[in-house]
Length: 148
Image (cartoon, one colour):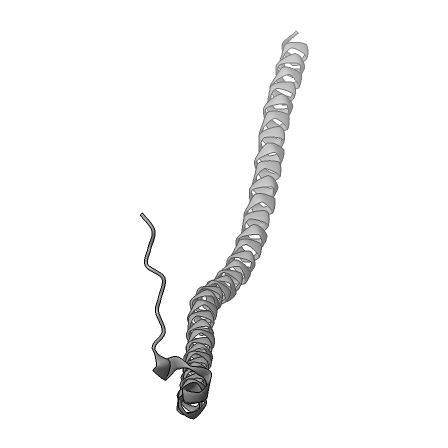
């Protein structure tokens, strides 16, 4: 089936259209101008929204980075304080160890000295027993000689 071709009335003749073209062109230009203006306004709104979103994102990123830095620094700070406390305790323990080492060395020297003295006493006692035995042997020999 063929579509009916449009029929133009005498009102659409070129002579009649000249008078009506101007308002149509003005309406068309006005519509284009209005569409351009609306597009421009929408572009400005979108740009403003994008700029606000960008600023909000930058602010949020700054807050997040500050929170992360604070969290990391808080841990680092507590570790640093713990390290200082441990170093202080190590120094205290080293001084205690040195003091105990000196005391142990003096006790060890005293015990060696006592061992040496006891050994000398034991040697002297043994020498005295030998001397006593020798004296008794000599005394018995002299008695035997004197009796005979």
